[in-house]
Image (cartoon, rainbow, N blue to C red):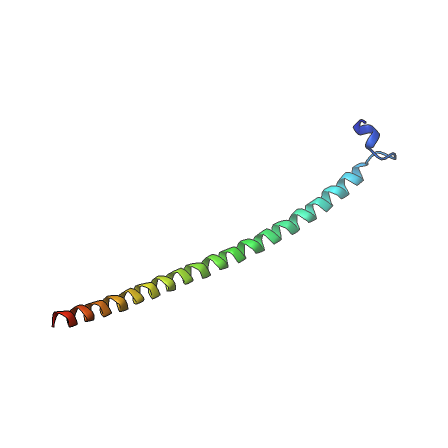
Length: 81
């Protein structure tokens, strides 16, 4: 079956039809661009939160390491006595 056989019968598209299609597609693309911009902003916000969480985790890990080292030094000092 050829493409021409699959096309609906009727009048061919007019310039007005094409202009209307172009306008409709333009609105759809504009809407998609707005949604993408919104997603970009959300991703940026999540990246900032992740950076903050990473920084806090690093500080807590360092603090815990210091506590463990201090306990080890105390135990070693007790053994020396």
